[in-house]
Amino acid sequence: MNKLGRIMLAGGAVGAATFGYAAGVERRHWTLRRATVPVLAEGAPELRVLHISDLHMMPNQRSKQRWVAALAELDPDLVVNTGDNLAHPQAVPAALRAMGSLLDRPGVFVFGSNDYYGPKPKNPARYLLPSAKTKRIHGDPLPWRDLRAAMTERGWVDVTHRWHDIEISGIRIHIAGLDDPHLKRDKYSKIAGTPPQESQLSLGLTHSPEPRVLDAFADDAYDLVLAGHTHGGQLRVPGYGPIVTNCELDRARARGASTWGDRMHLHVSAGLGTSPYAPVRFACPPEATLLTLVPRSKGGSLKSTGLFGNPPSGARANIR
Image (tube, rainbow, N blue to C red; front, side):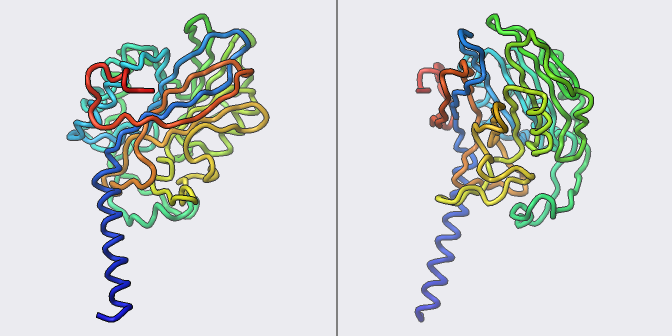
């Protein structure tokens, strides 16, 4: 075998091994990420917010269901779900099993494109193209109304194009959400306006973190916006980061906590799933995030904590 042949063979072997890891290992490497976000007034108690997004649930994804259900042991004060829960017309029961006793806690949600429409087979290379250059292809309608009915029956609040005010641990929280900007279903005019003065925390929800939407929330002086959709890039190159964000958001903000404008904070979840037609993740494990909201004077931090596989009873003790 000549030198070129050996190089090609070695390159093919590395590529196959990388794909095998991305498809067979990392996409099930469930990870808890922690972030401290300084958005509260001086003297306010800490608030623990569990952010979950992009489950892309299939009926047979049992380990994902068990892992997400075990997050209830974190004892969050508020659960936020930023959409794309479904990937199959029969996945509503599986998604509800995953959310489990989290549905007994205060929770709010908005939906994303993959709550409304199922995935369709497409060239995986489309994920590497800028969002504006790809034509959206809708799959069959999904039973999002059934999911919404079950979630609201358990007490979670759908904040799509509406406000919701709640008090937790003595903190008055004003929450507003949008329908999915990725599908251009967002109508910010329905929630426009500065949050009430008596609110001590203003929280915005959107599935896709499009800059035009973030600008609107920032102009209205929101403290924090939570979003998903990007999958953290899904494929990240070590030393470079995500190749794309699948929206107009810049790559540096594809996952994790950051700031937007003068005072607003942003958290983008890398999510817990993938399309069944692109079941790979590389250098970007599936994640949920426990956000600890603290007074602005304390600053913030971001770190990942490995909580992999199926957490045993008492999994909370394994989270540092």
